[in-house]
Image (cartoon, rainbow, N blue to C red; front, side, top):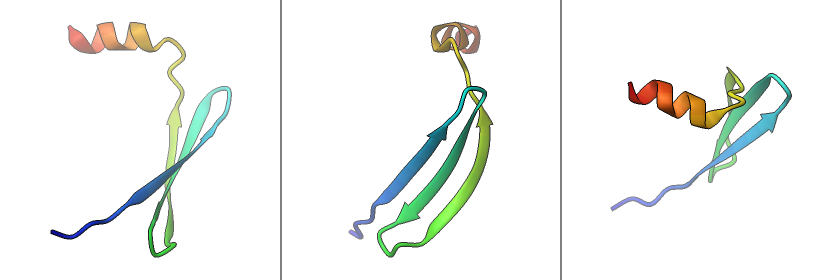
Length: 49
């Protein structure tokens, strides 16, 4: 079995979260920006419906 690791970096701002991923070789990839969800419990209830 191959073992590998990924490292996730999050740059949290008031309205957005920027995401980047790096592997053990040091290659860094910017994955994009997602909108920040302020009330996660509300989000979870909506998703469960």
